[in-house]
Length: 512
Image 1 (cartoon, rainbow, N blue to C red):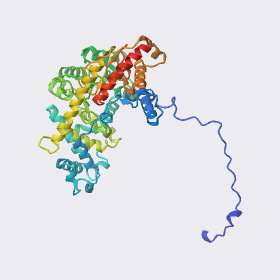
Image 2 (image 1 turned 135 degrees about the horizontal axis):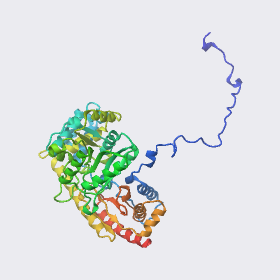
Image 3 (image 1 turned 90 degrees about the horizontal axis):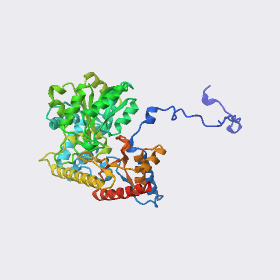
Image 4 (image 1 turned 90 degrees about the vertical axis):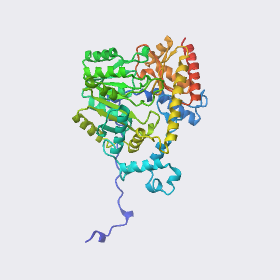
């Protein structure tokens, strides 16, 4: 007999299902992941540029948006905590956005549309066609190969070859989700035990301290000389190296940031030769963070890459192992959200390079729109192409504005009693030292806080200006200060300097 032929009694006559006997626990079960059981390396990791001061700024911003902050003495937060140019008004480069749009659009809506030439210049259309062919049928929506689209890597290699005057090969280029992702890969490959150390400049960009903490490695800080405009000396390198060895650590690598973040200094060829010779003598891998190479504001100064100097040192630097990093987030682009960048490997052991390839493969590939933007950054319109005139005008305006704002900010901060500030020769930041009243220092320490963190919160809550405490970057004992960008508009920057001066006077009176 089939199942369909079985006669069942009416549903209303079915016996009631037994009620489930549920035992309600007296308290929720303990969490598996807690502050005690989670990764302690992650728990203790710090990243100051988006730390407690910034979190407080975002909280105030929500209050302002909801109307709850009506009593505050300002109506907006001025975010000077991070180099995020387009967030504070810098316009994107037209040609780059045109090409990216044509790469993203379906062909029939973009490069092949009958009216495309009415909306886009011919060189933007031609470049987009070329890039679409390089990416293949999936375009910006498909994975690329691990190291990135081959044509885009060749564009980077050609850029490096032109910049340095020495040939570079695309097989040594990895495209990445910004320089930070590339730095993370290199440190992961370099650190092999908790006894390993990496020499890092102090002050430093917190990606290094944060990742070394996460990897369980030792940060050996070499102190930049503030009195000599943040100079790097062989003495400071040797002291950091010796201290690490005395602590039982094994120095494996050395980091330079050029131009400096947060310091704004630009390393000369002589200084680079000193660092390279030191790395060769002590068998250290050199990591050259060069993301601000387009941001040199001081007349008479120019960027020179560590790679160029190493090659031209000849036999003295033949043994140097070098990783160099660049990004679309800084320079004249400010395309932070696109997450584009690259690293170039110079004289790296082929097996190690294969293992870095394996590590990159675990992330499949860098974001393809960011790869495309990296290609555009290193291969912009050239003279004679229709878009070159606009590109040259836009980049010149950005360069001039940054130089003017750098001078305005530094001069304005220097004029405040109790402030001192070196020139912001490069990058996007000023890093002033601030004299704090002893009672303010005592008050902060009684709360277990860094004195300049208390100062930065006070500045935020009084003026709406968000800066990063200098303690988040590292500094000499007894020094206090903050890092601030000079990216906001000229008028906004003038107001910010005036408000910083007013706040400092009131802060000192409060703790007199």
